[in-house]
Length: 85
Image (cartoon, rainbow, N blue to C red; front, side, top):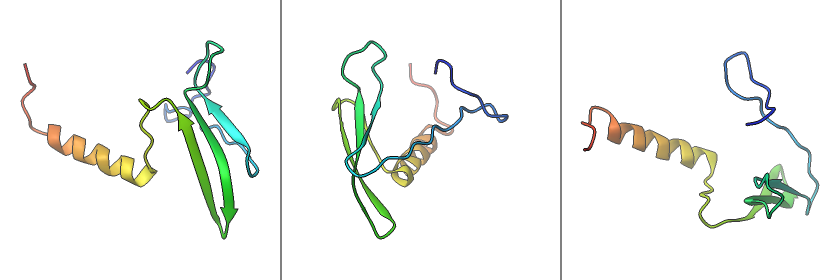
């Protein structure tokens, strides 16, 4: 990440944005082309926000808790396994 601020713990700082209904955030494409991913606020209701994701189909998008579970499964599958040749 160019120009990103690092935390004391070594990780990168989180970018925090405020968006209203139908406003978007474009992610990726530093070359001036179409963004790799656009996230749009579709609805805000009862403390929940509905987001729409539009982008390159090769980019995986998962809910945070599902991504964590998938990482855990990947870690478990590689624990103690001999590297493949």
